[in-house]
Image (cartoon, rainbow, N blue to C red; front, side, top):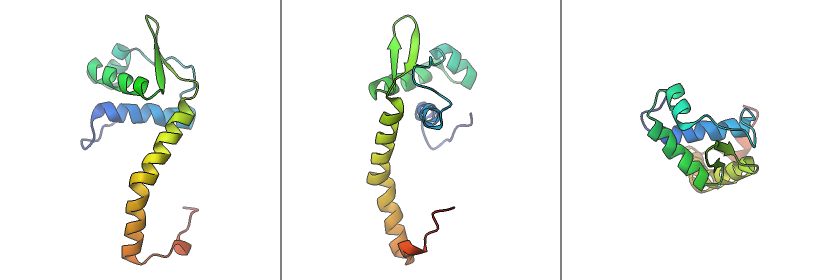
Length: 114
């Protein structure tokens, strides 16, 4: 995994896990690598992975079975979609529409088959 220097690594790891859930490569109920395993795999400090896991647990995307590990929640995909839709509608779409207006782009001109 290549990291972007403009965003904290722990958030990028969380995004990658969420993207995996949305893409179907990470399934509900699937056990995630341990904090140490994932840290070694990614070449990051295990504390960074722990921070990611704590945030994803807080968001209801994963859960911890004490002594066993972290697992993907049954409703993780729905939770992620709901959160990302809200973020898109609140943050990304207004900027996009504003940019369209500035450039004089009519919505009918947009090719959604890109």
